[in-house]
Length: 162
Image 1 (cartoon, helix red, strand yellow):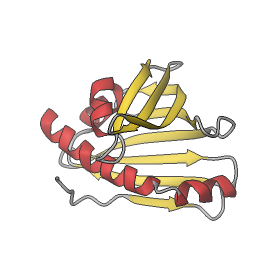
Image 2: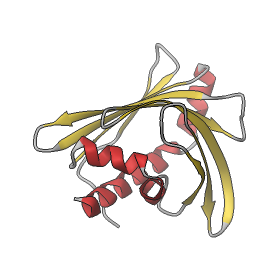
Image 3: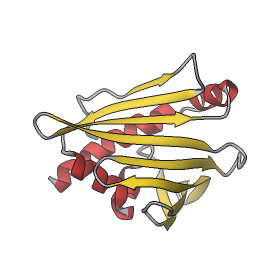
Image 4: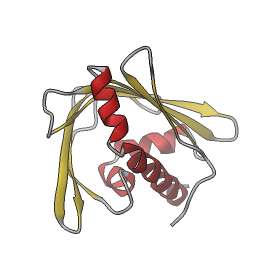
């Protein structure tokens, strides 16, 4: 297992029901974007290391939609779905994100890619949720493990693409 020297920060705002995730990658925005855009690459890095993602719908474009299930050992754990509201190549992805277990609880997610010196990228994700209760439930869900391990796996995918 590869670990990274780049830290992932995950913060819940006390002022608004939002969660912000920031992570830097040792690859240019074009590669980080590609790893989000291509279904096969996305499935390789998304989520914790011991979970596989079965992407059942993938229309990566402004106005498109997506759906996937998380599986461990062939058993389905959970499902997620959403819509792409804006896809701006190498810069920005805006999407909804819904857990099938709470279909009335969609979040709006903004992902921005900022080029850094040396061919690096800062990824910032901002999730806007319905309430502080929802924010607290997400933060307590263990999602940090999936995000951190997922981004470590993204490092590995980016290394393969370089």
